[in-house]
Amino acid sequence: MFRDAAFTDVRRTDVRRMELDELAPAFVMDEEAFRAFYERTARGVWAYVARVTGDRQIADDLLQETYYRFLRANAVHDSEKHRRNSLYKIATNLAKDARRRSRTHPFDPAGDEIEAAAGRDHGPVMERNTDFTRAMAHLKPRERAMLWLAYAEGASHREIADVLGLNPASMKLLLFRARRKLAAFLRGKR
Amino acid sequence: MAAACEFEAEVLAAAMESRWPEGAEPQLREHVSTCGVCSEAALVACTIGGDRDTLRPAGAIPDSGRVWYLAQLRARREAIAAADRPITIVQTMALACATGLLGACFGATSGWFQATVERLTALVASHALLAAGTVVLVLLLPVAIYVAIQQEGTGTISGGRRPAG
Image (cartoon, rainbow over all chains, first blue to last red; front, side, top):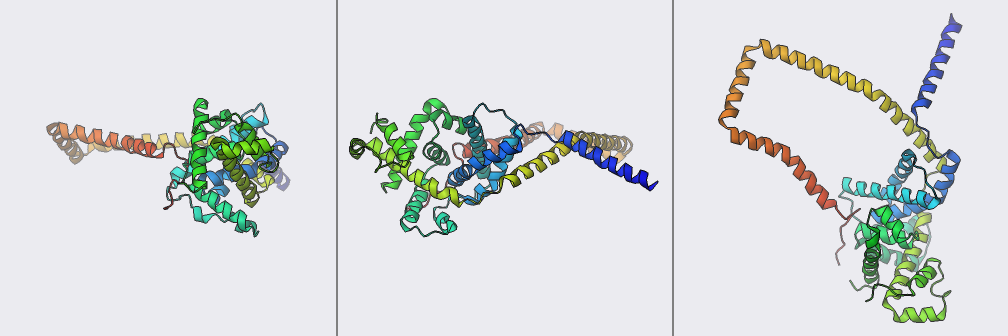
């Protein structure tokens, strides 16, 4: 009788596990491929969200969510670039949503403690970094995003337009304007 | 200032490959010193590139294995929740039907309830315009608020407060 009860428990556990396996959708990407992709892209995505939102805390919060949504989308990508663009598109949308949720979280130019966090003493670098952070704070989030994608990630106009949901034909002009605006702030002309 | 320069791509390539200005050709450097578009491109690309190199190592990036495990766990939980959803819907519908039936029985048997409904109907009929206006207001107000919020958020991704000075 005891053996039967134990056997029934085992069977139940197995059935439950099988049910869970059936319910849980398999990701298109396997663990090994995901981990390699994550290692290649995570720091870039984190830096992108941190710069676009102006808040490293938000970047910390959104990183896991970005990769989860990427996995759940189960999209098949024809190239590494395409996969990367999808990831940045998800990160952009999440940053947009985070901003809508918390309008009381402005870009804080004085809160850039990147150097301090890294535990290094780079006087001129720190100064340059603070100037850049201040200059970025004057730009619209969309301008920050397109500049970062263009000059930190080396994305093409078409890729930037795709990630930000903009018309590719207007990208060149929008990027030029954003760049001019940032350069003016960096030179202290505005 | 012109929106483009034929040397811009070359300057950007040098800046993004950290070859600017030392690793670039002297002719290119000379051109940049006189070209507004190229000097702007070099300044912005070098500054952003430098910031990227400083910022990337500063992030507290979770381990890839942990991210994968948590994603699997969450996907599984969501799948279970999705599988349970039809049961919840049926239960909710059953509860709604039972409540409706009970309400109908109460309405059919209660004298004071019927009198109240009649009084309310008469009141609405005598102030039809006011009642219609109230209904329209109740229906349109949420839509107006939604549209206003959407318009306010257009074109921005995050924190738009500009520091003074």
